[in-house]
Each structure stands twice: as C-alpha cells, then as structure tokens.
Length: 357
Image (cartoon, rainbow, N blue to C red; front, side):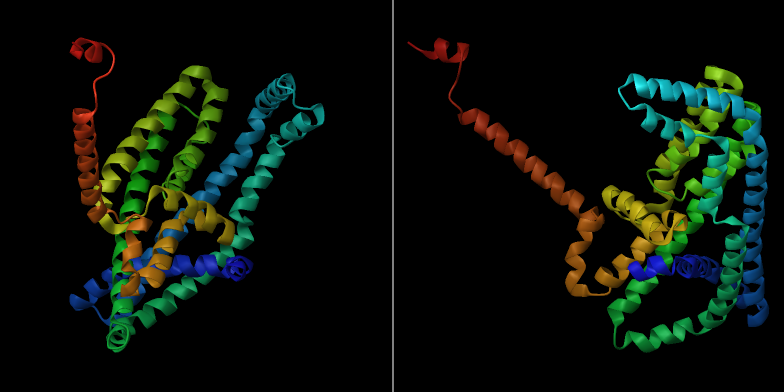
C-alpha cells in the first residue's frame, strides 16, 4: 500500500483506464459481431470512451475557471461570515490564535489553492489523460486475447477465472449504472440551481456527478458549496430550497433507483464501503474515493472469491442474501424463547398478591 501511494500518479490513471476498458469491452464485441472489422471496432470504442472522458474534463476545467472568477465577487460576504465564525469560536472558549487560523483557512485565495491542489492542476490532468488514452489503446488491443488467456488459466485456477469474470461483470454494471444515474442527478441539480439562480450552477452540477461515485459521503460533499453560495446570493429561502432539492434528488436516485438497478453487483457492507472510501482516498488520492468500490471489489475477488476455501468469509464483507434468512430464523427463535420464558416466569406485583390465598 505504501508503494501504491508512492506511485499514485501512475496507479490512479492506470486503474481508471482498466475500469473504462472493462466497461467498453462489450461495445467492441458487439461491433465485431455485427461485421465491423476488429481494428475499427476497437478504435471506435476507444475514441468514444475517451471523447466522453475528455469532454467531462473540459467541462470540469471550464467550471473551475468559472469558480475562480466567481469567488472574488463574494469575497466581502465570505470574509464577513468568516469573522462571525471566528467570534463564535472565541465565544465557545477557543483561543484567539486558533480561531484566527481557522478563519484564515476560509480566505477565498486559500479555497482556490485547495481546489487546485485536489484536482492536481492542468499539468497533472493532462498527464493523466495521456496515460489513460495510451492504456486504453493498449488494454483494448490486449483484450482481444482475454478469452484465450482465461481459457488457458481455467484448467489450473478455475476459481480465479470465475472470480475475475464475475468481477468484470459486476464492475461494469456498477460503473455504467452509477454513471448514468450520476449524470441524471447532476443535470437535475444543475437545472434546479439555475432556476434558483445559485451562482456556479454548472460547477455544482459537475461536482454532484463526481460525488455520485463516492458512497455515503459524496452527497454531503456535493451539497455544501451550493448551500453556501445559495445562502450568500439569496439568503435562507434559497438555502432551504437547495437543501430540499438535493435531498429529494439524492433520495430518489441513490436510495431508491440505484439499489434496484445495481442489485447484487456490489454486496459490500455499509461499514466496509465507508472505510474503503477513506482508505483508497488516502492511498491513491481523490480518485481513490471515486474508484473505492471497484478497488475493494477487486481485493475481495483476489483474496476471497479466488479461493473456494475462503468463501465462508464473504458474508462478513456484505454478501448477506443467505444470511438474511438465518437472521430471520434466529430472530424468530429469540421471540419464541422470550415468550416461553414469560409463560413459566412466576407472577410478580398485583398478579402475585392476587394469587395468594
């Protein structure tokens, strides 16, 4: 893990390219089955997925540029809010120096520096795109031999082959569904913010799309900036409206639609999912939070699913379909035992006094 952290600038785009290759592989196969030459089908699939990725990056850079021009317009309000926060902290007993340090962190220039550092700057984004494009081409070319390689491997490690095939199927389903629903969520939030006239609506829509890949905490990351700028531009009515819109959209998309569509593709416990976001963000940076679920699924596939003798560990990671029935039986037994215990328990209080001669 320390090695992965040291090489995060290569590991992060390489794994992202692997996930994209897994997602686009059925498209290439479908084109080949329809008579398209292999080379043309491979090139077309690569161009399509890279065009979508490049378009997203261009939108993100444009939105970031809008953010850097928008933030100075609200510098007086932000500074006034920071001063009020400092006074409140001092009122709670926090020292003046500590409160001032917190207030200094809310300076607009520092906020821009933090956002730029998280994204890695234009040079970092360009390098990542070059690495991703190169790996997409190479992985797509190597992918033509994937069925033959798995066939060779199956005679020696059948369980590993099954685990890898299941992993690619589950990751593909999770990423495609999450991307589609995240795009819908981002567009709905963007339109709502435009109607509410919240500054930087496009940026917050893009942020909502990115954070849809971050389980559990992505919603809270995405909602903070539009709440702040909504309050600065329109006061409490806009603040409450943004809170309601994000709450409804998030509840419908991530809590109702996504679990039904994704189904059993993930089957990770909530605790493991939350910890995986923190862990992979620590290891390979912000992209680790976005790819936390595919990374964790890969670890489980290699360590557990590839070894049949360790399959009994899988329910502990969140695959509890069979466990639900056992839990229901145990709960029913506990209720029956409690009822039996009450039946044989000697009477107390009024019932005991009434039963005495």
